[in-house]
Image 1 (cartoon, helix red, strand yellow):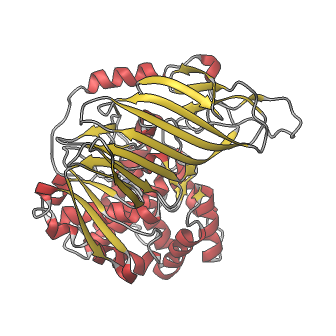
Image 2 (tube, protein in one colour):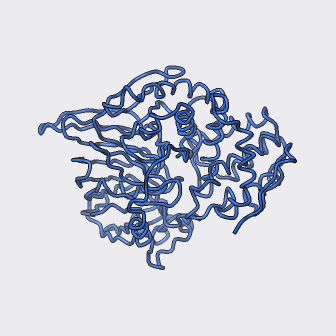
Image 3 (tube, rainbow, N blue to C red):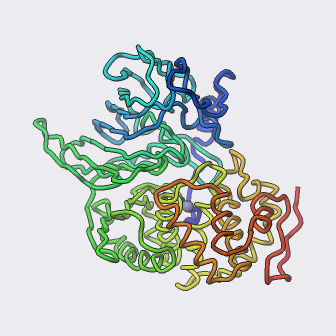
Length: 499
Ligand SMILES: [Zn+2]
């Protein structure tokens, strides 16, 4: 997501939402995460899958003991603020003999849970849905879980960082999703962690006159006997839950073509088509600009979902970035910064996923890096000047928000993960030179295309491409309490930490 935004509102319900989150996160001590269960032999006695992956920021997100192969979402959508009947089918494979396992789920009303068609025992414990199948599941065997529930399309949570409200976002005539960072569990039961990716099939029925969209390809549109319309989309590639998008509204599809015939489909509320056109039509140029630096666009299609919402921030939902309308109705420099930022994420953050939330700097630092590089060449601020300013604040940000690769939960989406992390990449470019840095970046999005990667993976790859061990250079930048000297800029000064 982007933190560059047009001025706006907001304080509403922050306190109430914060209390809700605090209550929801207060789980029993017995559930306190830990790492996934140790490997077991095929003959090992069935045991519970771990309730979380032990991520340093969100320990209970994701689950152990199985891998998801596909999600199928069946949503019988009604109206922007009307609860509706939903079913999620999870096709998975057990990676250990399982006596029980968890899904991450925070939807509001649970109805039934079956495993391979047989009713299972299901208990909610905070954001964990603890499922005990009638019979244990054998290691290596596929199984199918179906959860039926009532979805509340007004359900949101709040963070006091750049994210603010996330979850289901109602619009005047529909819905958009803002699942980042871990709000997908409000939308469907899942392994709600960025390292756990699976393809998604979306099957959404809508009242007549409305359109449903989702990330990936439209594979079916069928009018039902009752006049409702069933829309089917396939994500085509695996997608992290935080990057899933589905939306309903009175939409116009605006189709165009990008580099090499790439299909571009913008999804625009009918009454915003004309007013947003001047910046939407820049997407093909933005893709061409990024392809010169990062190589081929990594997915089969792209498009902008224009959000008829006062959300302050855009989101890089895979193949269909959510752009709040205000981002497309202001000045050109600001609009292009947001558009290039979310587009860059398709390479870094979406195609190259993050292994843990501590690796977020890789996703946001890169998106901001290319956003600033593009903007400098298109009427925006000097990249070097903005980096000099970030350098001056860097000790303060380390103190307040943690070093770039050492975020804490409340400080995850603070400025250190944006300009503060771009500064690390800027320092690397100063250290190895522009040509070598360009090769590192290309290698990064090529080698890890469609995969997850960690901070150490980046350091190792940079060292390999540059032909020098960069660990000693990058480690203090990424983890140190003090900001290292900036290569080639001995005059740059770090301001003393206040408070
Ligand atoms: Zn971003």
